[in-house]
Image (cartoon, rainbow, N blue to C red; front, side):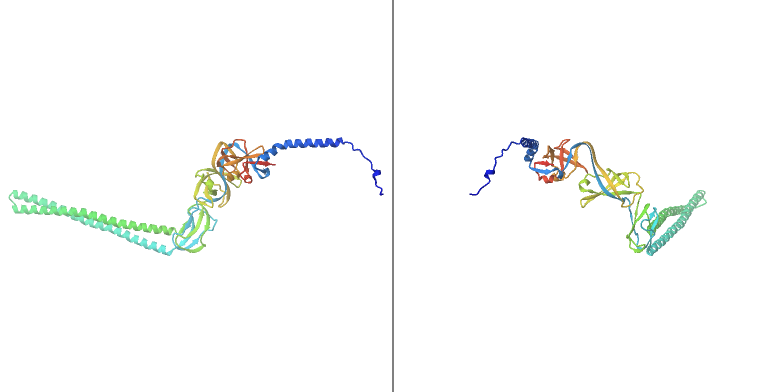
Length: 423
C-alpha cells in the first residue's frame, strides 16, 4: 500500500478581511457616482443621431451690433490717364526719349520725316498763293470797271442836264419869235434821249457793282477754302513732331529708336503720374452691389488714403469684375505704376444688426439652416440669412442674440437633425 501525505494535511480557517471588503464597497459607490454623473451625457448621446468631436468643428456666438459690409482686395496702381501716341503719317520715325524719362506737356517725344507730306503742303500753299493773287486782281478789276461805269453815269447826267437846258432856251426863243417849233421839238427829243441814256447808265452801274461784288466774293471763298486745306496740311506737318499731351513719364516704347512706320502705327505711351488710380478685381457676387462713388480706403507703404470708386467694368472675366478706385484729394507722390496696394470698399454700414461670424455653414446649407449648440447637442435649426461681409453674415430669422452655433465642419453631420458634440 502506497503511503500519501493525508496524514500531514491540516484544515486552515480563513478569517474575514474587513479592509478588502471596505475597498470593494468604496469602489462600487464610486462607480455609481461616476455613472450618475455620466448618465445625462450618455442619455444625450443615445438621443442624438450622430456624434462628432468638437476638435473638428468651429463655433461662434450670435451677436447684435454694428454691421459693416465691405470688400477687401489687393490692387495695383494704374494711370487714370495713360495716352498712347500714334504716327499721324507714314515715314521715318526717330524717338527723342527713352522709357521711364520724365516729360513735360508739349515736349517733342518723336519726330517723323515725311518728304511726301512736306511736298504736298508746298503744292497746296502755292495754290493758295495763286488764289490770293486772283482775289486781289478781282478787286483791282472791279475798281477799274466800277470807275468806268461811274464815268458813263456821270456823263449821262451831264448830257441830260445839257439837253434840259437846251430845251428851256429853245422854248424861250420860240415864245419870243426867235426860234421855230421844229427846233423846240428837236430839243425835246434830245432831252428824252439823254434821260434814257442816264437811266441805262444808272442801271448798268448798279448791276455791274453787284456782279463785281459776287465775283470778288467767289474769289475770296475759293482762297479761304484753299487756306483751310493748307492749314490742315500744316497741322499734319506739325504733328510729325509727336508731343506729350500731359506732364508725366514715358511708359512703353512700341518701336525701335529709329524705325520706318506706317500711318496710325503705335509709337509710345505716356503715363500721367498726377492722376493715379488703383485697379482691383472684385468677385462677381460682390460686384452686383458696387456703385460708382462708393467710399473706401487705400493702404500701403505704411500709409492710408481715402478713395472713391471711379469706374466699374461691365464685363465679368473668370468670375471677377475689374473696378478702379481713385484717390480722394491729392494723389500721393511716392506711388509708382503697377505698385501693389490694399483696398477696402465700403458697401454697407448699419447698427443694431444681428450677425454671426461667417463660416462654411452658409455655403453648406445655402443659408437655410444652422446647428445651434445647447448642452452638448447641436440641433439643426431653420434660419434665414441676409447680406454677408468679409467676416460676418446677417441673421434675419431663426436665431437670437447669444445663440452658439457651429460655423464650420457641419459637412461631417451628414444632415443629421441632432448631433452630439464630444470632447
